[in-house]
Length: 340
Length: 264
Image (cartoon, rainbow over all chains, first blue to last red):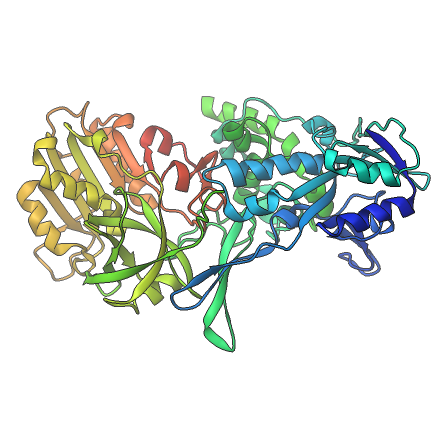
């Protein structure tokens, strides 16, 4: 059902929610950008609607709320382990359609692929999602071609128009709140991007043989394996285990999992010196094919949601969408070479 | 709610068997089902976790043969009988013994690659009625790298064993040569139905499987086991993924029809 609220009314609701939830939304971090005098938009806890950035794409995704960058799994002493506590409150996350589609990908890996992940599950069970409308596409987005520009499985939808907040609520528990603080109850239909400037085409005939194509070679020199593309990606899910111990008492410490990047050195290293993907081109191939080929082979739909953040962030101006569009030529190249 | 798979349990070291300076077998307490070819995540707080494959299964114990090559394994080597290690698992599919019964079986192992297949060798050693002929080809770098010397003596009485080293130095008791050199002369009654298991370093597996195919083995009768970096063992951390395959969930044991397609 649709509601229209003024900012004060919505802030009352945020205040009510804060008793039970941390509310996370894209926020402006002044001068927090990669270059001097540039800002950063990323996720943080908010208390008022004025803090939410509606008119720009966030540089990083909501992912860090469900998969913290560094997450303590348990504390240990010599022969005892103690599970880390759960955050005291659940979370309400404001996010765009591409990112809400990305949640399905995280769920696939952490709830379906093998057994359920205990730490993901206990956070995920207490998260509510509020969809932010996209009145237009942003730079480098290609959600329309990925089919992730629309979604309707949200708890609520939110849109800011002429200083007023329009909400479409799907969550019955929140109904009394919206009824109390809204001014009107107009019909609210989620806005979504219908056209992107960036287009991609994922060819059907990809096979593992595409690894032998020459298209990957340019990334050996262009890519600097910094891993930024993985860290901004709302669907990258890999982690590495890390043990730390306390300086004052070396017998006590904690085991954490921290985000890992398949582009960065060490990702495939095994003890004794083995490394399975040394070249940056091989790593680029591994990442691209995971996003638009092998994940689908395993799970039935593509992993990439077309948010374009990897293109936005790359310090070497490598375009992921461009690399997808080269796959067609790569298939032809590999099949011609196979005939030879 | 599902149990917390990341929390390790404590396991006591019941015995330490020293094979070489850097390779020991640790016999650890474990009650539960486990198959050859499966692995445990073994950890020591503050040093981390490492996936280690099962090299033997006893009553109430598992054997883990560990090569001292990293941070975690270095620290494990500081532990002796009565000390404890943290473990979780077992993970992975492991070898299915039924796939090799009533067949001529050739097991080819390189170095510590012998650990994951040792359970299979042990089984057919004590159940010789279940096999139509068993050959073990095991290769090591030098005589001082040979693992399971006592077991070899026992195996030699029950099956055809070829123990070979890359270079013998001054030792004249060992055969010298790569494992691949013994494949053409394998005596088999019916190569069309013979099975083979190959485990070892990537290059050794590549040339050994090529040799087996050339000898007439069918792809579907060859099994391999892969080693990869694994931080979780349960399909989450992503380090072991190759194409759409998770080595920890779908492997580490693969039929060669699938295994040959896995390109990192």
